Image 1: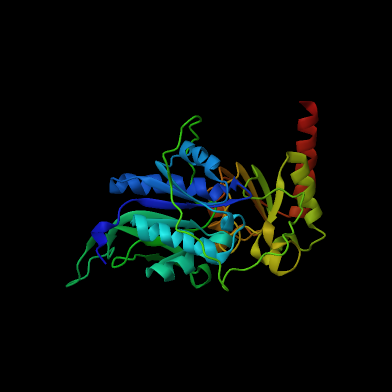
Image 2: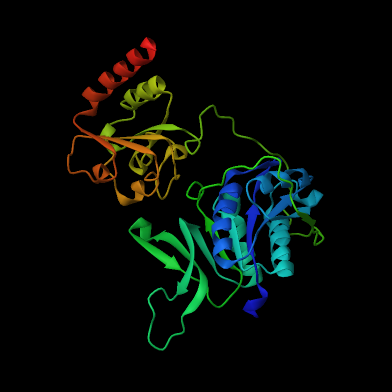
Length: 347
């Protein structure tokens, strides 16, 4: 493999029903940082059916170029045609870096593509940067420059691993949604579009979709919420979450929770914050009855303001909190909720 042939940072721009997933814009934002360090450009790969009209939106978020793979076989996500589409793009254009969102689709697509093109894949990354590898020089081992250093939690979040792929290209990573910052949208920017179709011949590996059933929910995605009222094991019971729901309603927020709450069956997985849940960046994050294990903190430490309420004054959550209240949440929350209601009524 001639590594010098591989140039550019490429991003898989996931779309479903002709709506681009927010992870695509986050990856473009991080891709721009990586591209600037390497002196190259960011290319978005848009795969689907009748999706060319979405290319300008990718350009508005910073994509220098958009490769569109458009075919009726790509109307709904299916592993085989999508893996063929993305691996064909990589084989033709030879990107140095290929980023995919660690969504349900990306977790299925990324490993299959990396296997086809014979390169490594670091999954569920929380940090990406350009640097030297090995990070700490070793006697007798060549230090390679301008490598993609991919950081991810390992061993259940108890350690952080930084991984590189110095001998194969592209350097591939799936990236956890919510951890990268999308850039400010520049309305009116037109995309530099290149169309590419490798050809699709259905075979026995093509799954036939008989029916699509969409889940209907009236809950807000916690990754989009501006205010989160999050509860942990210390809340005590599923019934006691009514206190958090009342506070969330009063302040215009959304309820979320820690892994312990999900494991106990008090709340659904969709509301879990943390390394094995979702990464969130609300304006205000209430951590109520949450001790503050590293796995949870990793999912919410980028919040603008963190308010912790816990009866244990030594709880690790206070080390990242902007404001902390030591006391019984059963006494504090009703008073706080009433004060907020009164303040809003006065205004």
